Length: 357
Length: 135
Image (cartoon, rainbow over all chains, first blue to last red; front, side, top):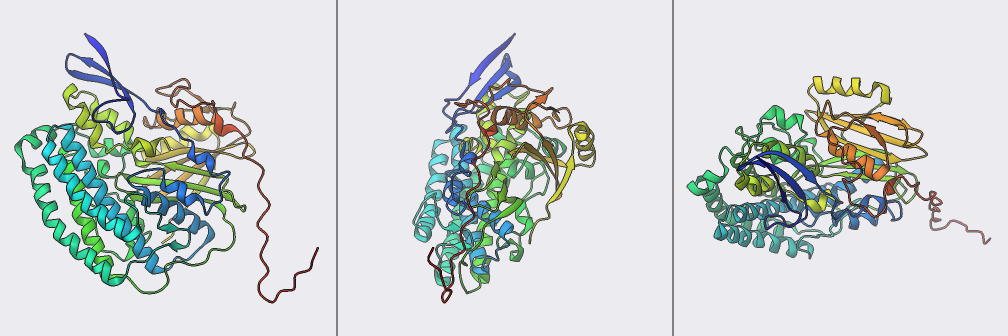
């Protein structure tokens, strides 16, 4: 017999509202119908009334976790339209803050997934380690999640070279603890039983359904927008972290691998960062259209910017990674057990705040 | 590095054929988005190994019918419902059609309203030593 079970918008595993109608036969989910739009804010429309330089603050507030990369992507798009040459030092500082964002976002996700499968002490351990990264962010920007450091033409704050080397050294020490944490996620028998073989998404399906980020890379597709060489990524040696299995365990493994990758990228930045200015004066007004693409912790984010030579943009369209990962989430939930639904919702690392920009 | 921005014009009649060609060539659907201009512009974006391609459709108004591409890319149903709810676009045969209930917005098709007229371009401030005449 088929039954429809409503899941969300309020549910213990959901920090933000999304609703799913789960069509179940006994304990097996046979169909899922998503429903979003509970908190749509219409921030894209605000661009018609706000000065394009002031809008960086709004872009940063689209998300409370990957806020810096939102602001940076917006700045990157406007800078490309206006052909602004951002100083190299600013590019490196943007890269450092982006990678710090990635580390704290992935540690947050590890805590949430541990909470979803009922491993409370692992959840607290993950968030304890995340707090140390937030301390670094607070020391360098003054904010914990809203950095307010990016501006069109560069960055607002500098980090001294010595401080940057200290941060890299601190992260190298923290990496020992990340390794212990990762070992529990990847080797603990009870964790593996909740993740291995659950929600398998093949590589062709992941591409066909438009997956992005760790969701795509865990299915064996080595696609990462940082390969576009925006900010300082052109001068950094790295390769996308991938896994082949396409299940929840693989998605967890990719995110853990990316934490170590971010530590390594910050180390390279601390050694390669050039001296010089951190911003340039911006004159003129943007005109034309441009798609800016960058890699957030959750995957590819897109900012479409259309400008008409006035101080207000004609259109800003933001395609967030969670929006792109909803169709693959529906695919992996079809055929799963009802008890696995919370884990599968979390394996896409949903950020509804971004999605409802 | 500046990413190449490839924009190709198309029409609602040619859309399905163009999109099917992208699917067959192994492109991923990246996004579908609309812009309110004098009429409406719709951009369909695709990616293959970081090669980024956009198809642009121009419409005089939002009553003109556009075929859904959700039969080619199933995931397009989210974008198409979004376009319907925010811009009031008339998209036909969406695979999962929310009939205007995808977003719970206070005003239907709020993004279809014309943007305010462009403000006057910023006056260029005189540089030091320039003679400024009193008006």
